Length: 259
View 1 (cartoon, one colour):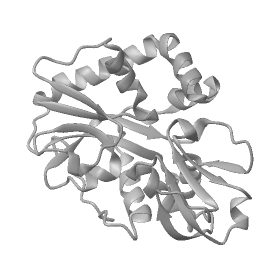
View 2: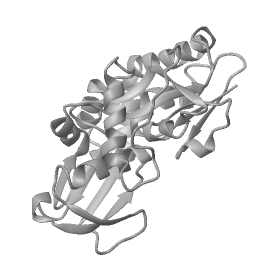
View 3: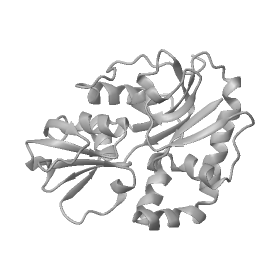
């Protein structure tokens, strides 16, 4: 069986211990780390910790396992960068840098509704005219030399009173709760090791990525690593607000394991 982990800032509690070899995968499991991960990368029998909008594309083949997720309330791994105050920008192209589908839909859901900015298109390429740049991952925690930086998870919380669910765990449809138990235990052990051995890896990570240690500690200290019963509303809101104008379903009928 194969488990694929999206390797990004939000999933550090799982990917760091795996990369360091602190926790071995369960017998019979092949575990991979991917810098980018989309629904199209999965086979029908794959398990994955992936950006939450991708789960909406997998409803026909996979179910969500609530015991592993990346959930952010008042600070998160996605930032909006502008040269002037956001409320001074009326219309602009938007450049996405290292954004997963979760980061992109978060920005799409907030630009007009929260910031009053009309996006004249989204691009992942160099765009000289872009007055809005959305960044995800380590870059979102780096101090800006000029201009303004907005934490989009905080803005999302103010706008919707809901958390930002960036990543969820999916399993093949029909998977029984008992069948996923070894995987759930493995992911729990990874996260526990990351916390227990945080002094071994967090400062080297900050030095390598030029991230302030207090920013990383605060982000990881406040994130939740599983879904609460009401987090389905947050998943739906991200698609309904941010999915418009994309090919993601905006009213996904989420399926959860055991449901």
